[in-house]
Image 1 (cartoon, helix red, strand yellow):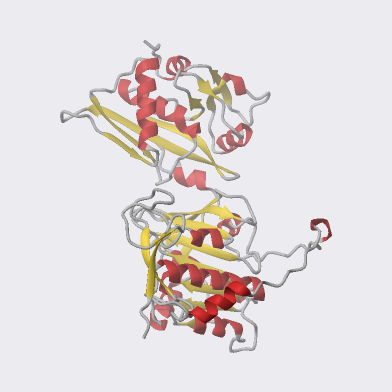
Image 2 (cartoon, helix red, strand yellow; image 1 turned 60 degrees about the horizontal axis):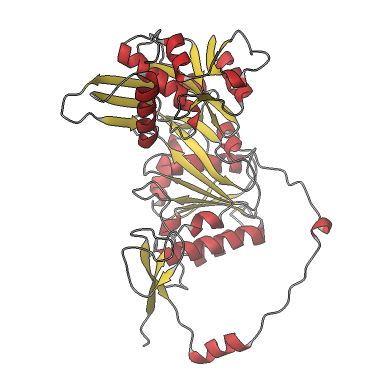
Length: 465
């Protein structure tokens, strides 16, 4: 019997290596090489493959391609439909990733129940749980999932053959849900389920099945210790849409974020509240993140973020206290720690607020992750407020990026941010004087600031040193 040949393939760039190494020679990433069993063709077949040419395909001018408007399927979970761009596109493939226990299976089981109720035959394939476990979860949901077809199987060939057949009542399967892609394996490749080759091949065949039959395919993906979806990076390139389900296990709300969407805008978020009966969409995320903001203490500021096309108001809290040890601590939750270090340096150099001997803690309330620089002004205002122990204006929102020279720069989509702030009852907005709109929405009092010194003077009543 011929010995199976194995190669080591990088999960980030797909480069092959004949032996394992700590670093990929293709992209330079560390600890990304995984062993993959490959089947070698006999010599005669390899010779035939080299000698026989392919058949030329037919081409068509792009302007003559017939376009049709395919109606999307609405699930009734408004936040889920919003993140997908208005609903489910028939024939698409959606990848949903998230931490263990965050609610991925619960969410897709609710989607399956709602699609089944709308007349779309749905097949739920569970490779991790038994039929009894899925039934017990379904009984806790507010949706009626008794009509959903269930298959407990890990073989890709059996899965696809079952999905190609009509369900019990004779309808063709419209929606296929696979939980999870790391448990599915194909007989064409050697190796355990979940390795690089198995995940890539199974995802590619599921994608071809979706395009050939028009079946919408949802797959659940595990995440690694670093927060990315386990398996090769090509997994995210294959699918049409990538959704990350985020949230803190100690909180009852979850955030569904789109990082790739071929049928809608990316970076959209949907907010859900986890209840005993399943996930309930939150219509106003800003009210959720600011709901506990009653008696405002020092070190608290509000900023309006843009998550895709949706403005969301979040609270930024900062605490500067005397260091208890030799080296002061710098702790950042929800923002980049390097961004916090940069803002502390600007606050020291341009604002005269030295935190060299202070422990600094910065937190975005509600477990939100902030990546855009529009939160800079809120962070420095909260830090200065904590240092002098003087509260900021209670109903004020801070919008601006802070440069290394202490200048306050404008942010994008300012009108939408201000409109969301006015809707939530904010009465004052601090923003760059170069981006002052002609008319303020609602009763907002707009305060234009040019430098960090102007911000400190208007908020904590202290001139920059």
